[in-house]
Figure (cartoon, rainbow, N blue to C red):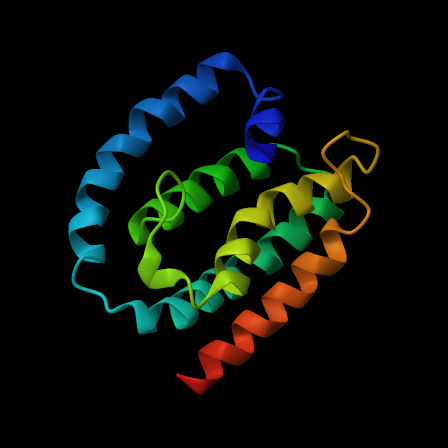
Length: 142
């Protein structure tokens, strides 16, 4: 997984803290996700990206690699809440542009900082931009 390769750049202790913290948050957020209909996903995903993307741009401008540790944690939390990171959520099959945009968000940001990294595919950034746009359009229709 691309996200895993990027996490090896963070210190083991910070990654361990994340791995201990995330399950606690996930337990609470999974209960909330069961109440949300799948049709709410595009709006939630677009909202998540709309909040995160300006933060990412600021981190890139400041060359702040540490931002991406928190961004990774937030992305995992978001994806777990909707059930599409570890297991497939068939209810979200109609919104692949949104799931892809959320999952590619951290990788695209890290690739903008270190474009020569092996996970930085040439088509990743344009595909991400297109998926974000399509997700926003889908959210606007809901």
